[in-house]
Amino acid sequence: MNVQIAGEPTLSGLFRVGMDDAITLPLVGSLKVAGLLPTAAADLIAGLYKKKQLLVDPQVVVSIVGRPEKTVFVSGALDRQGRVVINEKTRLDEVLEPAGVTANADLSKVVITRGETKISVDYLVYRSGKDTPDGKNNPILEDGDKIYIRARIQLSGTIKIGGEVRTPQTTALTNGLTLSQAIQQSGGVTEFADRDKVTLSRDGKDIIVAYKAIQEGQTSKDIPLQDKDEIFVPRLMLGSVKVNGEVRSPQTAVLTKGMTLAQAIQMAGGVTEFADRDRVTISRDGKEILVPYKAIQEGQTSKDLPLQDKDEIFVRRLEKPKVFHVTGGVVRANTFPISDNVTLSDAIAMSGGVQDGVDLKKIKVLRKTEKGEIVTRVYNLTLPEDLAAPVQAEDSISVPYPPMKKPKPDLFTILGALTSIGFLYTQFNRR
Picture (cartoon, one colour):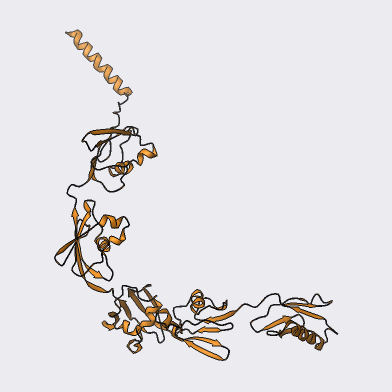
């Protein structure tokens, strides 16, 4: 608010109304003004200066230059505490999550103080996705709310959470921490979790915990944790599938929720370069289903198939493997399997590169046409467009050999030659 006192520039100025609903005035200190009209605030200020005998008849004018922001105050087990600006639709999560909830926060008992009323919120229920439709555990906040999250008392010890949770971790054991709360602190379970077979390892024994039932409200099944407890959330297993043929690691894999043919092949290391990607089959209930795996790889994911228990995937070998040949002045002349988008540069690299001294402007590619004719084209590998030229199946790439180097005669070679000539001349004259 702007307070102007006639003839008193040092006492005039802009003053912000604080969290205590007051402004601090020069010489007289704090004065509560929240809720007053500007004229009433002016009279109050004038009376205060007059009462303290600082001014005889002060003429005060007050105007509001900015409306107060709606705020709440957050404190407790958070990385960042203090005042947070809100609007009429701000909910609890929009304040807590940016503030950074600490690992030892007790989210089951978040306390919101609103005037004389204290509201207890089980924020863990909201985080688990089990809140009521009215958002009881993620309420809309009001101006002036004070939000407090107590910290659990840290005990001497740690626990481990692993498996199908979003953030596997080892964390400190806190007072009253339960299995379900520890899982929530790890980000909750993934969509592939087997919530009926969560295990708690304690003192060399495995305890099966019905985590799904706990989530559904049967909190009596939850278990308080102890030092060195290990929680493991297994992946939901629905059976097994076999993957064989032209894959890098043929195997029998555990079938999990949502697994598709493409995922199973990737688990088997992917297909080899000799795979016929257009003729992948699934054997199911005595029938064979042909799957266009190549199309799936090219982005047509709608052609991918979800797997069932006892499915058998078989990746056939190409009847005639598609290859190309590299000959001549390269490090490793050979025949190579061809895949999609192989360029002339790729082909040379696969053969180990060219030998020193090769004329890169005279690389020949021999290609058979549909009519069976052999067409030869010369490429210049110093040009980017020629390096990027596509290679086709059965192409023969001929790299010229480097020219033979003639050794330069040294002094000893010359003297040796002259000596030999002289010796032969002497022998001839003797005859």
